[in-house]
Image (cartoon, rainbow, N blue to C red):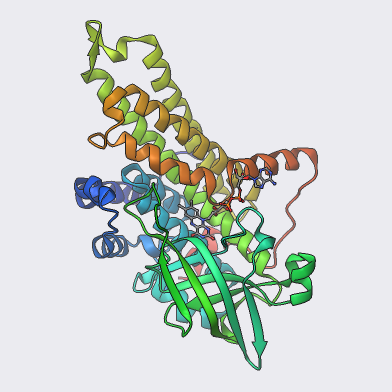
Length: 406
Ligand SMILES: Cc1cc2nc3c(=O)[nH]c(=O)nc-3n(C[C@H](O)[C@H](O)[C@H](O)COP(=O)(O)OP(=O)(O)OC[C@H]3O[C@@H](n4cnc5c(N)ncnc54)[C@H](O)[C@@H]3O)c2cc1C
């Protein structure tokens, strides 16, 4: 049975992240958001000190060795303050580090996972391209093999931490014939270092949400990558990209849950301060309805991500459950943010109050890591028997194994 009581370690982690984000980030977040400023040293330094950058990585590999529920709790608390913080958990701790943990060789874990978990190196995930998002098989990046090296060329766009991360998990075609046929067994995953010759990056211009975070593109012009940096086996790139999404979506689900809670708390506060027709607006039934919906959405979203975390802890395949948690929480967060602005009336339409920022920030999560539509299709396909999950060669280690590796 699932036990919903947080243990001492989980409670302590939740409390520490909550206090740190309230103390170190919340006071300046409005200004940083308005100035499109990513407060790199304070944020990454603070998260590293709290152990968040390697939260569910075994201590043997430089991490904190905490369970997957702790990863979810951290994501929820971070996005309660600002989405940009949770995005770091998604791409660095989720998409990248957990994928290295499951699929990496011992050498790759020593060279990349250890510094990433310790927070001395930051990591990202590069799948999307200008012409390929939901349709991942449409990517154009190629990796051509010469001797014991690959040469990667192509462009990845809408990449979180593109200008910040040191290492990227990059998906590219290694089989030209399979590329033509769109056969995903022609895709391979690589660990690419920013410092490589031929690598360049820049910010996504005109982005209107998650403004205190970094989102950009990177280009690879014959970037040389040794055989030793192929993650998994050649041809396993698509499976690895999807495996990574199981981890990233989990953090997105938990984060969106935090955003719903932030909307709920801001709305309750405002509904008791603002008066119309001689009473607090919280007295109006239609305002109550919006607040009640936020509570219902918050509690439901939390249960869904907790179930995924519990499954991860127990080594159970959770693609279906994590997808549902991500879909539900992100759509609910959009509803909550829209209603939070509504409850604030014209004040909600101004950055004087945080709900406008929540409204801008929530939308990204309805798009990335599987759009609302892709998740809908996935859930229907499971029910209709058009989709099922086959075992992958490498799985996320259950929590008990994480501990025993220490
Ligand atoms: C803030 C932000 C950060 C991001 N960070 C990263 C990152 O770190 N790494 C990374 O690789 N990518 C990242 N992305 C990219 C993201 O994953 C893609 O935007 C996403 O996969 C959707 O792809 P797209 O934008 O090309 O939309 P498209 O795939 O072109 O979709 C456009 C619309 O068509 C719909 N659609 C597409 N196919 C179907 C279908 N079969 N049935 C029904 N409807 C369909 C979609 O749901 C959507 O509404 C990020 C995006 C954003 C906004």
